[in-house]
Length: 161
Length: 180
Image 1 (tube, rainbow over the protein chains, first blue to last red):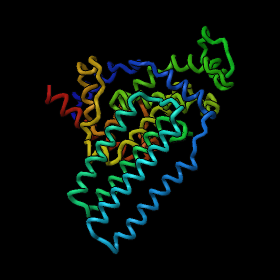
Image 2: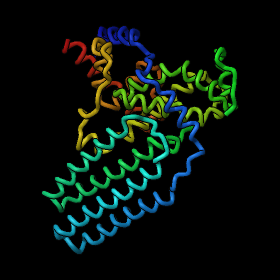
Image 3: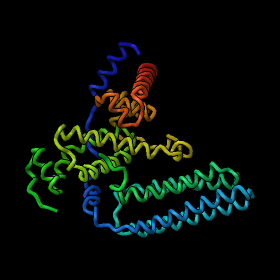
Image 4: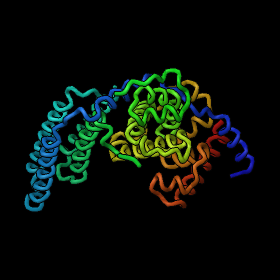
């Protein structure tokens, strides 16, 4: 990197605007989260049970995969996985029914993930033996669950210090 | 929650002490004093506005929970800055799944719709940098973090931090001198 550009870069950095005010009120969401801390009683046991069902189903599928490679079993598995995911999301949404979300755009993010899941499901119809796609589908479902939890339970994520 | 007459209080130590005692009004004053710094840093690290808003809220929720651990060895703003950096890096790490890279691609990340940014060459170029190069450049060249601190925050080697910075400077030089 040339010395001239280094000077240009340093000059540009010194002119950068450091502070920036958000364009919408963020305090309200913070306040709601703080006031709700400790009040919520999320049915973690039910959520854990739902997740366990998914894990068991995935494990069962991988075991059966060794013995049965038919396209039908893959398709059935995808349907089972989708049904279990719907149940998990329904349980979570019911649990968080009275809990305000910290962000307003989480539904957009969720819709984006669902579109991604739909893309993977379509790809699986053409290539039902693709284990990487199945793992992707499972990952998307897990990210949807994580998103729901994160926007309603931010303090449970990524503890610091 | 304890009510506390803090509307006229501007002394940071008093506000921090009151916040440690559970005063939400005192914490709101701290929020108002520092939200621009936190949001500005978050914007530069995570690049899109909705994500920066999420990170900002997450920072202030964490700080409320952990403010008892703030012993005053450093300035509150320095401590808050570090919490924000860590939260933003953690946020990026969570987003670094296959979803954005494989299915949606980086293009799916909406950029900050701030008209003032499109006029600033460096600001625009920083947003174009690859994620890790951007984080290292922002923290080192703009915010003054040492490579050792960045390595610890990002969970990478010191040498990797230096390599990302070098890469960032190369790209910035290319973009700022040849694409004008």
